[in-house]
Image 1: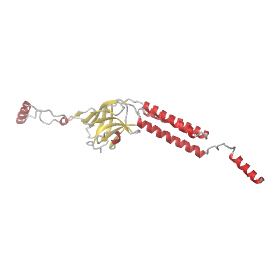
Image 2: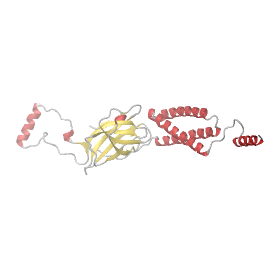
Image 3: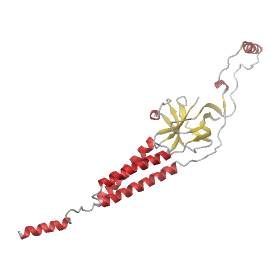
Image 4: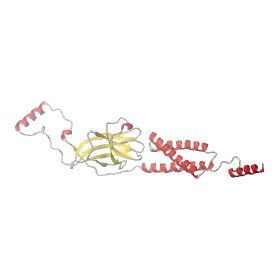
Amino acid sequence: MTQVSQDQEGATAADGPPGRVPPPSTGAVVGVAASVVVAVVAVFWATGWLAPDLVQHMVSFGIANLVLLAFIVRGTRAQPRLRRVAIATVLGTSIALLAVMGWMSRPTAVDEEIVVAERRMDDAPAQPADADTQGGAGQAAASGDPGDGAAQPEPAGPVLVADGSFEPRGKYSGSGTASLVRLEDGSHVVTFADFEVSSGPDLFVYLVAGSPESDRDVTEHVNLGDLKGTSGNQQYEVPADVDLERYDEVWVWCRLFAVGFLRAQLT
């Protein structure tokens, strides 16, 4: 009987006072911190996808974090150490993400020297000829004078292949002209003139095929590189193997949240 009592007292001493929860292990702390980081990043991405405007994103992200903190406090009442770790992780991860978001979304101005080109004469809209013009063309052809009806030589230097005006997507704003230009060596560039767009993170310039109706339909594209600035003239090289008959739109695209900011139809 005495031996049993001693064994029970030893077990009680090892487990601590009745009602006391043992402290979490290091593995549990690391696991909670990692889970919280994943949750915060997921909330950050989801709120940015729904409201990728920087101000709206910050507000919605803050509200979502408050909800997340409420769940953390409720779920870790019996583990003060885990609660402190989880709250600190939420705050630290949120501050880091917002700092990176703010840095990536800062407005930038550029003023590159862009190629200025003329459209080919045979690409210009045809004008209907009246009787006098037709008669004059016939007389010119009979006399051997090429006249106005003859094919005109292409302009020397770069040639404007197609262009179009930027149109905003959704809640974003912007303006300017996108032009596809063939250089003298046969290569192509896309130029932005009088350009301006809302600031945002992770913006790129895409050539897009298929005239997609929504952002989710943007499946065929060629990445021309990072957007050089949110305002000002700029120019982008087009890879030589791109089929310019298919890729007939220029988009300013936010890769982080998979949304378009601007689009221009090249005609």
